[in-house]
Amino acid sequence: MTRPDRREVTQIRALHCALGRLNRVDGSAQFSHGDTSVLCGVYGPVDVKIYDEKLDRAHIEVKFRPDIGVPTTKDKWTESAIRQTFEQLILAQLHPRTLVQINIQVRQADGAVDAAAINAATMALVDAAIPLHSMIAAATCAVLESGDVVVDPNQEEIDQARSIHTLAFTNKAAGNPAYIDSRGDFTMDEYNRCYDLCATSAERVLAFMRKAIEGKVSKEAKLNTT
Image (cartoon, rainbow, N blue to C red):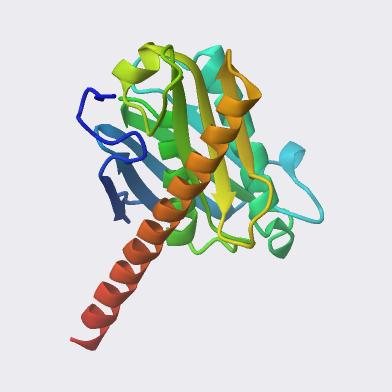
């Protein structure tokens, strides 16, 4: 099949990540999949309001904002799901009675926004030096009406899709995904194809993340020696 941008069905769009783009935050990252771009800023650990205070761990808060308008019900669900995911990954017990706030702002939406949001949050947490059990990377697949499965769909493909699947995997040993969001009509065979394709794509994203982090560390090391 021929995709709108002429990619192969297993080919993700070009990735871009810029760390430390925001001032007055503890860490930030802008992560892009092609024309989809998400900016994330992290505050923490900082003082927490008394009603959110936990005696044995940090309180994790996520705010998700779309590129246009106010958050929808879908956006609120995504916000909650991302919070639950990072609650399992952040070593919150190291900073009891504090707050880690993750602010996600969609800058441009052209498909696979949830995956870009998770990837941006991961990189912003790393930039803020928030301790994590592991890094996490996400990818999205779409099942088209034709039955074809494509990875990292753009908005045109999502509009034509029968189902959309976003899965996130950690960089630890192979296991169950840390995040799953499957919407629409699909067969078990189609889901399994999406699962395998998302897992492979997430590995590519994790490799890209490692290079982005190494690049920043190398750049900072050079600045410190001058």
